[in-house]
Amino acid sequence: GAINGVQQIDGALWLATASNGLVVTQGGRILRVGTAQGLPDDNITQLMPDDLGNVWCGSSRGVFRVSIGDMQRLFRGEMATIKPLRLGRDEGLGIINCQGNYGPGVARSGDGRIWFATRQGVLAVDPRTETRVLPQPLARIEQLRADDVAQPMTRRWVVEASTHKLELRFSSLCLSAPSRVDTYYRLVGFDSAWTHAKGGSSAHYPQLQPGSYRFEIGASFGGHPEAGRTDQLEIVIVPLWWQTLWFRLFVAMSLATLLGMVVRLWSNRRLRQRVRNLERETAVARVRERIARDIHDEVGASLTRISLLTQGGVAPDSPGSENLRRIDETAREVTLALDEIVWAVNPQHDTLEGFVSYLSDFAQKLLSAAQIRCRLQIPASLPTLNLPSELRHDLFLCCRETLNNVVKHAGASEVCIQISLTALTLVITLSDNGRGLRSPPRAVQDDRIRRGHGLQNLQERMTRLGGTCLVGSTEGGGTTVTLTVTLSGNTTRIP
Image 1 (cartoon, rainbow, N blue to C red):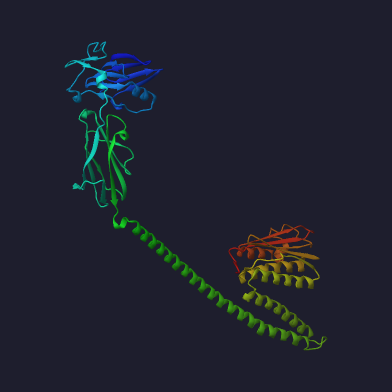
Image 2 (cartoon, rainbow, N blue to C red):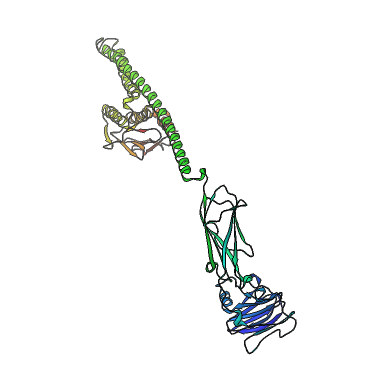
């Protein structure tokens, strides 16, 4: 906009503009101050400093005074707005419209008075008179209303939480300069900052949460609200019965009790299910034990009797002696197989230690009969794990099949059986120093495998158990069979 006046003040250049308010330039920086920063008008027609640290301005809305110190703080960013002193009804003036078309429109006389040309005539302002100290304005709370119903005036207002609206009416008193008074209020505990009443005389609040609040009100001549705080009121919102602490504690305890009951019912249900499973397993174990005992006592005794009868039935050189010898050998083989069945069925052997012990005894007897040295590498202590009968029986069959292959086909003089357990993974390694296989053992098309060495059966059986079977062999360098199975999903730890 057009420039209506220029002044050099404390090293800064002040410009009065027709539409941009006051423009201050200093050190290459420019500050524009208008109605957004607190001025009453953006059309500044006159500009004149006094000797008391203020600048007097004329505008289309009257004459006002700006503090040079406030402008400097605004320039440095220490303030966001300023509060000018505006001359008006408090000084006995009506509507003033300063001239802006002709200049000079403002002048300062030797006695310090500032003369403004206005459309209503010439206005003389004495800065020393207008900077007098005014008495502090007073602000008071006049009336309390709850849901539009007047309440008795008190310093501690107790309100039910069911109240939907609170209204506090107030007034401010300053007979010397009433138009300059700014009234502020805030509700501590609800408002985050002071609220400028802006001509209003009441504060409204919606339904408040239960608790204690403090309503404060103050009045000042453009100063900070804290400096003019003159009245306050304590407000207590009484909670409803379902908002009280004891009710919330009761609800929390009820929920905790309900949760405990649900957890207890769930735990009891799991415990009953576990008891039923244990009873069922115990019943099955009793049946297995009875079957094992019956097989051992009845069938085993009968086979032993048959073997004894065949041994002393006829003379060795008689015509039927060969048949009796074969019957005796068959009875012995059936007896051995029956021992394995009894061991597999008997629940007393459903442990890792029972499996290792039975495998060691079997290997030593089989290899000793074949005049093959047997070396055992077994941990000194084994964990007390419960192995299902199917798992330990299939593992034993794999080991037996491997040892039978060594006795029949390997031509070995020594067999090493190594058992290790790492992180519930059982590893059984059976190695011999025999002639080995002619081709890589992983290729199941090997002639010896096709002729019934059972390596393919080993792999299939271990796959059913969720384990692996690895065979390593070099021709003339022996064979190593490694059986690996994970026990975590198949076993339980014995307490």
